[in-house]
Length: 122
Image (tube, rainbow, N blue to C red; front, side, top):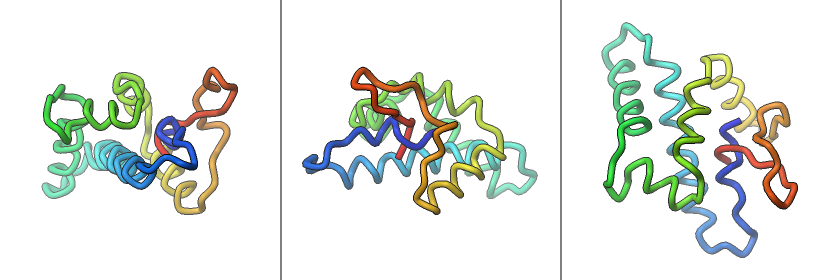
């Protein structure tokens, strides 16, 4: 799912923690956008609007979505395309999988050139 295209970090990568952190930021933005975009509560609706702006509006800021994706070596358009297909059930399932520490092969992207399964965000 959105669990592992950002997880292609090698064990000796000194930036592993940063990559995981930014991966979680992307997951949280997708969660907020999908879960709250139809909310009638102002606070939740604002979370969804902020997430939508960050995910889908192009930005040159150092902490903008494109910059984060570049840092993680993932294509922002692939992540956006995938995020647009998510339903609330998908997001809840991904959250459950993340909390349990398991990966769902059904949610994986196609294998990379080395034959390893990659997800979108770890």
